[in-house]
Length: 612
Image 1 (tube, helix red, strand yellow):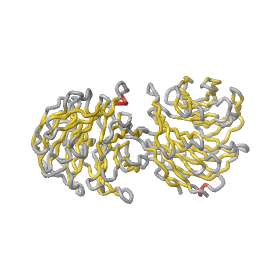
Image 2 (cartoon, one colour):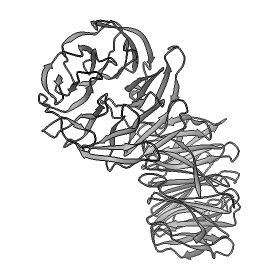
Image 3 (spheres, rainbow, N blue to C red):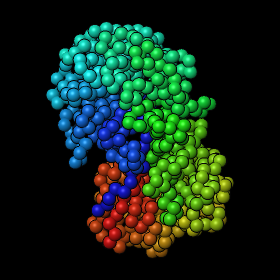
Image 4 (cartoon, rainbow, N blue to C red):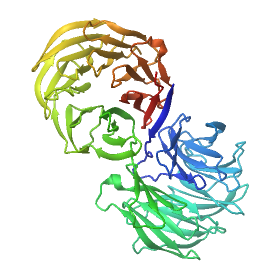
């Protein structure tokens, strides 16, 4: 058996030019946000406590707790809403196809009986309200001609629904059953977000015209607006009321978050505090989401970073929660005692995690560099992407230094580093050969091998290299200076080699292929030491050895991590099913009984194995 120890969570998926919606449950002090096909439930008191719901078939856009906190309704780009329970595991209550296209916002009525959803109706209805347990529609929502970006349910009786969207309109509906009441066009650009105050007396809108408008909650008439003095200089993407309804939090493309005092009659909103302002920061510093929950003010930037501010001290630096937004392609563990994990994602982000702590720091590669492979020793990180470059990033006291790179003239397929060799020799393979690098990624030699290359590895001592072919053969070479000499060709695999890893004690190596098979080899005799490792149902993406060389872990696109003990039959394996939604991209041991994994769901997890 393997027990989940920790999840280093991804952050919300974001989209430039669009706001995102986060929500939460004030009673449990948890928040909900979406990334890919996952809904993440995250504690504000213990941000390391994360649950992930991954049952949607399409990317999820919004999720919200029911008023009693027993249920969550989540919606996706296909127009589907799923309603599921949060206790004793995730239990699906209902699933409804609500709109013909993407759902952008979703709200429960305060009695928990109805749900309103808005989004892209593909030229038809852009808003729908329905009974939560039957799916029956409760009203007609005419009046919009384009995508409806946000909707809000009046939290007090008589119920009302307010909507806004890309047609610059703010519409107001009576009900239930709901019917059109009135429409307003005070905004001159997309209206991105609409929210009722907790007592239902007012509602507010935020727009790409940089303005916020305040409306009467009973009649829908405009009664005021946010003052232009000290106001936002960019699109307002999200708004959120304080629990007492006296203040509002807004976030904007101008990279600032502001707290506003709202007058009792709603006629004016004035800035009390600019919480955060990234000033000259890049586009990733734009703020696209916010939530005021209990005594926490939460903002989300375009790069996904979540900032938690304390209501009782606006000047206190916020707690920052960061991580990946895209699939995590590679892992490296630095030192068995430090328990530091480096992870890299397709979008060029490298994140440093510490066990028991979580997020520590990050480095965003510039110029659109995409990361495919990452290896590291105590002094540096070597990585490659989808161009012809190999990068080296020095590690100075565990912190990222300035990156430098070299162009090898071919797209790298695989990268490995001889961590115990004096010059930290690096082996890079490409489609027809390999490149040997030394030190600060200087080219030692480029060698054409005469067969289609698929994967490679250099031994930790730098004296041997193994290159796997598209034909499933393993070519073993001795390394001398800048040259390779072929010593053996091993045949066992029936598919292209995908990964090769040496054991830490240098007595063995393991290989995996696209035909789902893994093999452990004796390094000295070149004989198979453990075979019949064919328990994955799809391509093996990654392999890793325990520090004591007694166990090997494999990760596959079948979502599973499998751990084998090399001195026992393969049938005595430990399998972690559904380790990562969409597939496992990387595995690495942290210590003899703890495995780290990462995958398409943009998360990194650690698993504790049962000791023998």
